[in-house]
Image (cartoon, rainbow, N blue to C red; front, side, top):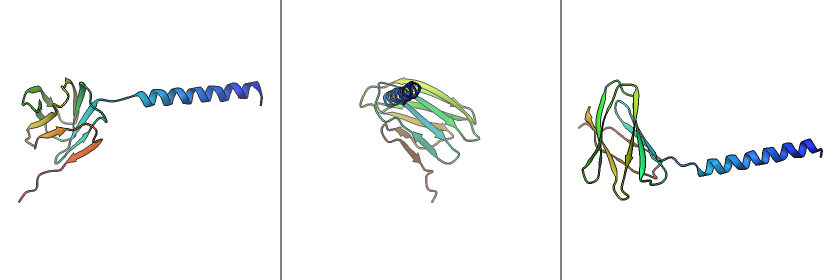
Length: 128
């Protein structure tokens, strides 16, 4: 094996290890709430953090107005998201205190943001 081949293999090995280490240590503490016309999808982080960000993506044709509260009922933030747009909010959360998104206009059911659940969907309510 030539000297050039050894250097090339060593470089590839070091790059692979570095990307594995960096990729493995990367965590996201972001909730993504995607609002569609008839349902809501939530993508959650894998672990709890005191500092989280909430991205609200409005994929509907209506302006979305809502608020983020904690389980004590305290308002953390009000949001207004134009159609086909998104906003981001950074929040501080005490452990054991969940964050809830309440769509006010158009009204929809409360959406509890649950970490560690990866992604979940809130279907529309059944009409009887």
